[in-house]
Image 1 (cartoon, rainbow, N blue to C red):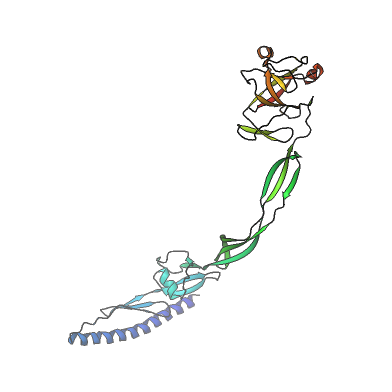
Image 2 (cartoon, rainbow, N blue to C red):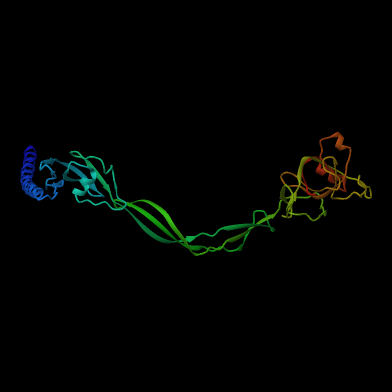
Length: 338
């Protein structure tokens, strides 16, 4: 190994001396011409000139015909996915080393260090070959589903009203390729070829599994908007409400033909309330919080002593006392509609 290094140094010295002789002859010739031109009053100068020798050494001649030897160094350069390779280059910058090694950088190529950095013996330089490639693919576009509530179906039931159809689109991807491998992929463009068609799914709101102790025929028109919230009644109809009053409910009965506090006759669908909490004439809807037992639509048209003697918030009218006993006392939600 030592012999090889000595032989290499000897080659460098012999080559440098031979080249120096050539350059010296050239410089001497130019200098002689300069003297001749000076005598003939013509300004001619020997410009700086750099001669790079095969082993990487460089010889510089200047105006004074002096020769400067720029020593060579051995650097290892790796290009792309290839292995490191040794090059003898002038002891200059990374940029000069690459140029001397005849390694050209592409538009997007990168080097692992600054091109202005100085190289020394055994400097390692890595060049990454970077390119970008576009790829276009055709893909399916999944349709969206719109849910539409309907009282024609029971809760938990669904029905497809309009079938959805998938669309197609053309997607362009840009791949970043470093040293032959894809390192990053981005979507650089999308073009719709065929639009998808939305699916419409009917969702049931009509309730089942509830009961009424007595059929309550009371009904009146209600709007599905205009309140602070909405709910679905036992028929699946969406109804707006202005407020909710929750609390215990009891039941009472009276002889047919008797009058309420507002002067109307007692009937199913008429309820007694605290008028300071729920004004007379208010339209309400009453059910238990679990929605299993429904009194239904009613009008606040009566009051009673319970307002002052208990925490009851509503007294429901039933024609029969036995029905009142079945109801007993249980919590309810009173939706005040208007």
